[in-house]
Image (tube, rainbow, N blue to C red; front, side, top):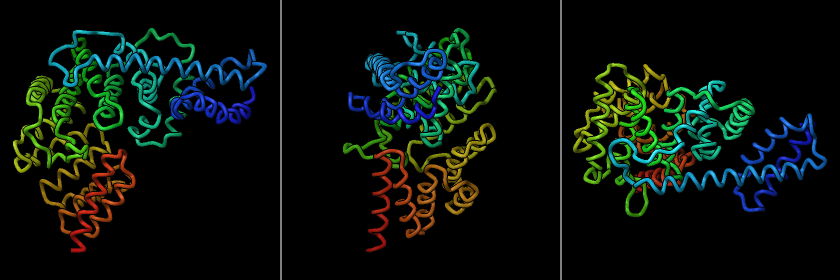
Length: 381
């Protein structure tokens, strides 16, 4: 098979699909799927017209993906904006698909990426942002995963931990991204909790409920992002908070602490504070210490630096931050906040502007830009 020919044809075929009405990301994914078919079939049965073959197969892949996406969106419409307590009454095959895509032949990272793309409906770009890797790297990872499972019978399901990771990333994208998937992720996690006696399933459900409870207060009437410290806590959903705390307490009582339980404990402490001044930052730092011990995650360390800055003062937070990689997403935003609290408005304004340029969403970019403008106005005055 002529791999050079495939590389030459790829941008042309993507362009044809875009002209037919596909958006670029969907066209790219469809062509990747077609290339996988070419790698499998062309050595034994090469087509007379490679370009025509690729266009036909890629367009069919695009239509299949579009139909699957439409079906998924219809399921989301059936889900209430605020998910009701208790197990889901309407079960479908979505959760089973999550387990089947988390196939044992794949590494956990590849299984998560493939499931997010094939079932979760996220774009390659969104998945890459969640994994903190370049989009091209994630595209290659997904393509390799597809090649690995091509021809494999999906009869042996993956493990719960991989499915939880997928649900967590889907919820995060729905909670903070461009596509509303949060309610669907909660529905599926409720269903999984009803089927599985697993403390980390309960921990993830608690985490989702506690975050979702604050959703109405996260944006103002004009659509602007409202930071946690400035949110109207009267708009928080106390029913979801009570359910989340109850689910978390029952999970913690089993004394098998995991990543999602620790994150949910942090969220519960925020939810328990009637005002921002009453937040128990010392205990939040302790929970972040547990989370870092479990995951050694740079994102957990970044969040811990914020909590240390609140508990022990901004200079302590800056000292914790100094041990982290400045290339981390939102590092500049955290540094700006701590610098401002420490009185260094010049550095804070510069860092807010730097953070805005690399913000992952328009709402966050707008918020950080306004923070920089606010400090610059104070400096000029």
